[in-house]
Image (cartoon, rainbow, N blue to C red; front, side):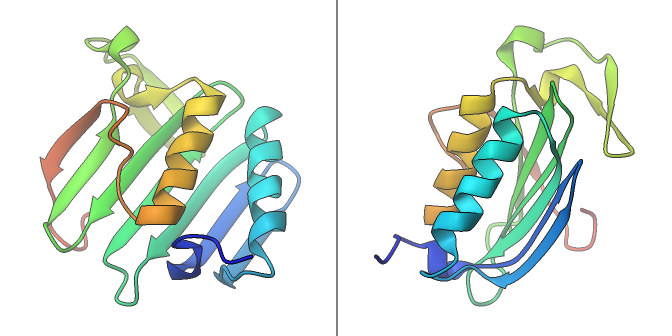
Length: 146
């Protein structure tokens, strides 16, 4: 079964508390297993890091730093030179820092809903873009600063 857009995902790197997977190309044969693996890692609070590119020229990228409670989601659109950080309205003005996978992030940018996190990932796998159902902080992006 061909999945919409998933064949455009490559350089997928996933780190969980139990293992690391490096997948060069997400293809029709591997997609179901990889999606199930990601969903299970998120639901169990075991995802620590996920990074991948979308498009032939890596026009879009997704980076997630996570722990059992929070995830920081960053999507970069190289074509428009825009970076998008997930916006958590619950903590909109809370600059309290939380350490995820060795990096500090403010609570205002942290996703704590596992279903939303999975939805954002699947939408990116299909389109290479942000999921507009959710709020995002948009900033100008210069290559090499991520």
